[in-house]
Length: 278
Image (cartoon, rainbow, N blue to C red):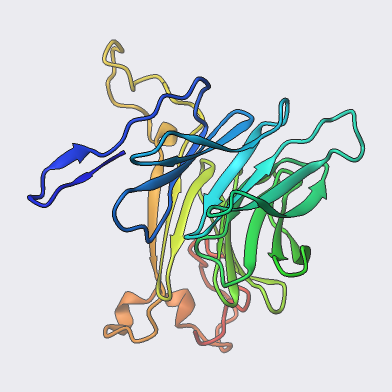
């Protein structure tokens, strides 16, 4: 762990050695003083605090962690069940970081949980994506799913929610915005590579599509042509949803068209009501 000191110079605050390959790592937000992190290494989850030795938060042999996210007081992570046992299915475990106790188990599905988000979710709620191509919203007080959306053809790779909408990304490169209350899709956008990162607030959305191929032809210094083809490159999209745009020309025509127009180019955006006044 590294951070700036009083003079603004970065220095190492703590260093930990873990015997297994680290798959996921998150810093605990809103921690003052000594930084705290949660790391998942195969089938073990560690709580790492500067000035203290690493402590095991969860460990079950043969059940690797498939995703991880944390809030200021809780850690949520998916674990892969034993395939040959019916009662040991894939679940999401919720741990209290202060007491280091398991609070609840969510899910119990045949598909692996591929992504989870608790840090940005409303209080007592959590959103998760699964390899069974569905996005689910859980109420932590009831330990059950509030809604389940069939979202992506090749599995869900990233997800985030707020009070009323859900944004999900899939392995096939599709970004979907959902109305959680109605359970309907508002719009979608497609790119070539899997969606690995999603972040949004009240007016902006940023997504990152990262290719699975890490060493395409043209990306190595030893290649004859050092320019990797465009289709092999990842891409970052930034969307702006501000309602008080100063220049009407900055809004694409499909979003300014009315029902009087029967045809129009949709700019690869799948709007729920394409020709309404947005």
